[in-house]
Length: 634
Image 1 (tube, rainbow, N blue to C red):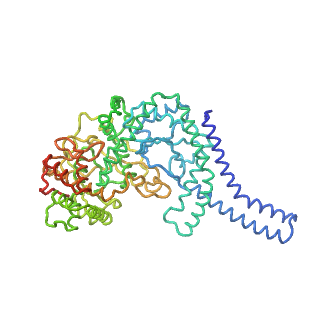
Image 2 (cartoon, rainbow, N blue to C red):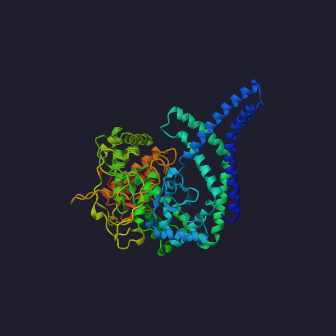
Image 3 (cartoon, rainbow, N blue to C red):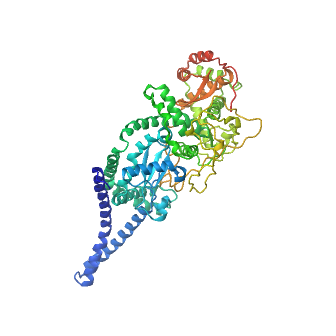
């Protein structure tokens, strides 16, 4: 460990943590030591009498109980499975240039190189220790825990948006953290704290019988006492490690790091907007975008055209992107996209009829159009159940007239909420009501809900764009390097020559191909998440998915606005020649004559909240929508 002030402070705090562990051990051994003194006094005759005899028996029994309890607590702490971040591991042969850059960076910083590299669908980077035996890593299997450097976890959006020099500058202080992490005292203190943190969650683990749960709660109470004594020291130790890493990295790419930090904030804004506005509607429809990281580039490029604060950022795109350090960027992008869907929405790990990948070119038809028609069909089913003009056809005029004659749409909003809840709890009936693929499946019904046939693909929907950036396309000249897949059921590799463009095209993809049956959707690439995908990766308690929901549950008013907007868009598509589109910053959008109409939302809200249909009707006349015409529903 270097001579930085932060490193010395971290070492001092690590020793304080180890002293907490030593004190706990001393407290556990104290009754046994007292029992040994009393027994020795009895054997030598220095402590005679009935009182001392009774004390020897009581203290000896107490010492046995305390020792057994201490052994049980120590065993639980040692065997508890520390939390592990879900990631996509990048083997060395899949990214030799990336490993070479990290090793060169570690050499310039004079610190050990990370033992491996992994990607996570987040805008952050850190070091993670994976030497615990429960993690199943090479170091854990070989028993080499003390001398193994941590794993470098990189946010996948950084690789696609940042240039190589920017990524190197951003990773410099992260990689510098391997120096303090290699110190034996700091490593031992971190293992102690992680063991305590993992042991707390043992009592909440499902499948424990009442006796074991009672014992686990006792262990949890003891561990919480230890954690309270470690909390301050652990926080200060990590601050010291971070300060030492930052101080060591100051002389390496410091100027470039200042510029690169601007890109970190911009990437975070674009990633958050892409997930909440673009990816989330697709996930709700049972489709997961397979090129999320490439979509960040398009989203931020669009942002640079709209926002003056982002002007000039796209001029960097002529430099070499960091994703070129990967042998198969398309394969890695698909794996991280699937992992993002699991983390933020709770989708399954394998594809199926209700959970299939979608490319950006297919997004308007596979997601936007089907979302609108599914919601419009649900809206008319709810109107039928409410007895609103039962014999009327599925027209926009029926919806507008009903909302214009009611003071509030609360009854309709509540009925829509109940209908969605009914579809969620009874996936079979929901599937029968919406048998066409792409309808929103029940969030807890993945996979295998009946009534959802596989989506037929269209070969014409996968054109190859000649101006497609090279950094976003997989290499068709050779088979992909498979990512490590220790998961019990590894998925087959995909075919890189079947990959469509990463950006949406200008034409609509037809919903069906009448010429010939197309092959089923391609399977996702093998995704490597260390350990058990449903337990170790999500934490010691087996946390339910999604771990990080993007948005709170929508209110009834929001659902009603979405369904009315969907009905308006369906009518515009069927009667006015409008087309569904994708806006990289706002998600699904309606294109009329190739232009967006952002003013539609306010007119729909006037109808719902004020029962005033005139703003919407004037918009319909301007666009040329005929509300009396029936629309095509799913």
